[in-house]
Length: 348
Image (cartoon, rainbow, N blue to C red):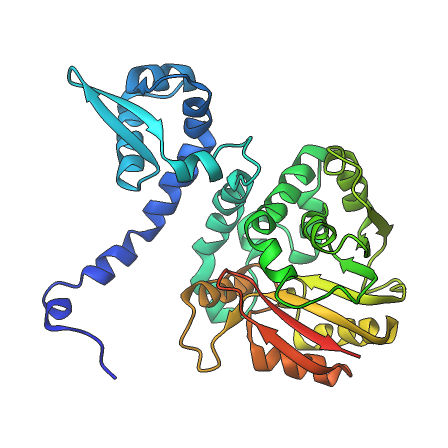
């Protein structure tokens, strides 16, 4: 069905907005990187362009244009006094774009800017060749990506903060998509610093959660992410592809399956099934594509990103159901959350 109106064909507003999409994201990334939102948050009053440029050590004309664009994006508010512009954060910037906010997406923005933005330059090559573009982008193969990301402790911490960001706004929704209270021993495979595990124990305090991740990740998580309170979370150092997976009632696999080919997905899910106690289950947390491939647009774009960065892809609910069923899981249920990430539960 053709959805275009006569106005669309006379003036293709939608296409013109799409072509400028990269400008929108890079404007936001640059403002985050310069610390615009943090500076305004720390100030007790609105700041002028001149003051902002001076304190951030950036060109005043460049600052004027960047700040003005942020107003257009509704990331900043502006007030003109005696012909001079004074800026403050909007509520959404104050909550999500300053580093100190509990719901900060700052590190996510930096990962998108420094890694994903660069990778997407090679989207045509990824589509033409059907493989990721890390070697073209960074001069390394994808199998060496882990070591490259974690060359220093600071780089590892930044990457883990990026991975944590989404669970601050989506975690509770996926954890409460099903009643998981009957699962008392839980393993979060590839759980990084424990952001989703924290959401789980907050909802189900009677359960014991263990994060299984690579040794470097576990050590960084213990040092940087478990200091604010005594979280009832355990850690297990290991590689879930190559090492034994301990027995548990429930296995959480959040943003794991989408990284891999069908062959590797089945290899991993078969291991999980063998380690799952009778009556236990596996919870997959992923973005879902519509069965007819019509959307959602975010999921479609993420699937392209998986092509560019990994050997995996985003899938439909039925594709996840087929993977789980082929691994032995039954009574498979799917719940959409209304946010980026949805939940698929399979039982043994």
